[in-house]
Structures are given as structure tokens and as C-alpha cells.
Length: 151
Image 1 (cartoon, rainbow, N blue to C red):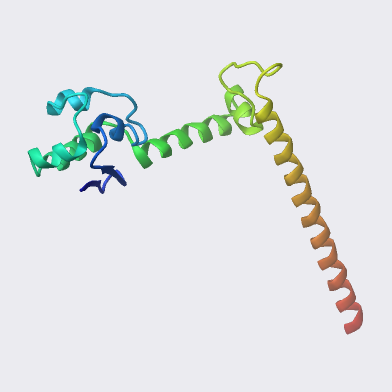
Image 2 (cartoon, rainbow, N blue to C red; image 1 turned 30 degrees about the horizontal axis):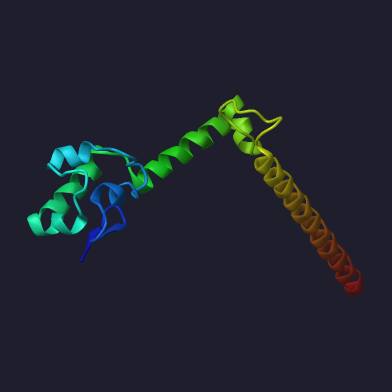
């Protein structure tokens, strides 16, 4: 038996602990408020929830949707905040755009992977721009040759 949370786009497995399964929803984390709200113990299994009451899974889903910012809405809110910082050209926005650490982390001894990713992305962009320029110049040459043939 599996419990489907349609509004949250997730399913909870029957034989696992409810507290660990509910943490898989983006934005919930290690929140015990849901357990306390519905009177569930720490080691309550998902299968027991369905046995106790048929409406309990629906009530839990309804509570999460109405009282917590989770899943797609939370991801969209985070993206909006980042794009707002980038458009305002704040320090953090510039760091986001460059792919560097944003919250004051060291860059001298740490963040080598982000620097490597930044360099590879720049190389890819420069290669793409080079290819676009070459393609556009070839198209221009073909257009010029076609115009000359018509004359």
C-alpha cells in the first residue's frame, strides 16, 4: 500500500517511517510539527496511518499545502529571488551569475568545483558563440553568392 499526495507530487512507501518519508517533500525538512499536529509518534509507519483513518492522509496533505510553502511553489519563489538579485545587479546577483560562492565562503582554498564549472561553461559559451559567428558568416557568403548569380 502506498499513500499518494497528488497536490505535492509524491508518494509515501508503506513500510518506511512517516517522519523520514515526509522529509522527501521539498521544503519540509526535519519538521516534527506535522507529527505533533496529527498525534503521530516518531516511529509511526506510513501503513499505520492509512489503517487508522482513511481521511488522515488527505488531512495531512491539506495541512501541508495550506500551511507550508513546499514543492513547486518554493522552487519558483527561490528562482524569483535569485533572478531579482541578478536583475538588480547586487553583489550576490553578480556572484550567482558568475557561478561563484554567494554567502561569503572562501574561494582561495575552497570552491574549486564551482570555478571548474565556471570555466567549462565559459568555454562552452565561447565555442557556441564562435560557431554562431561562423554559421552566420557562411550564410552571409551564400547569400552574397546567390545575389551575384542572379545578376
